[in-house]
Image (cartoon, rainbow, N blue to C red; front, side, top):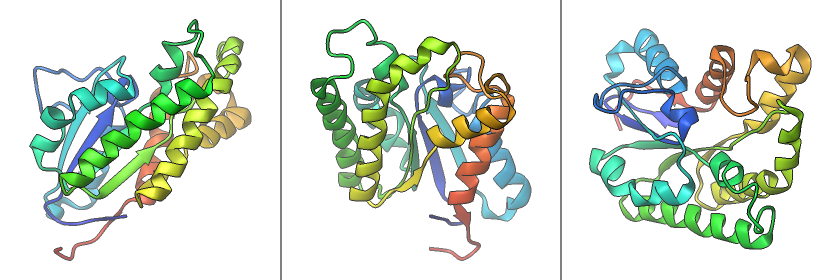
Length: 215
């Protein structure tokens, strides 16, 4: 995906995007990959005059994103929207009778599709879809796979359908953890360490390329 001069980029998602941002300061990017990405682009391509916004909210599920989509994203008139959501749709429903069922997967797909359709209808077509991930820390996180894997597959199919840039993180993070130790990348299987955020940043920037040519 190309990034052009003067583009406005919004990061939208849950706590992994939020990264403890100060919500009373609408320009605060938090302490995670939105900040890392913005700083890298700013340092390398200051002439591009890019604007970055973090609209992650800790604890959000995909339905929560839909509820605040207009106010937090569309109203900013973004050129690019980067979305990462899904882990809370699994984590917060571990005790639910619908956990890992087709019913849960169908609901997730419907809400995610609704979000993408709303963005498309608003004229926002440059989308980056980041899949959620879970690492086996603690070991019982492996029981989440029956539910999360379905959601990952749904996001992959939607990325293809909506011609979005897709960033596969689950395999990337787990492979890195296998090589170097899972604790280097996350302490709870979900929230990245600075090293984990660095890995996510590198992967995002590998998929999104700057051009100095105006649109």
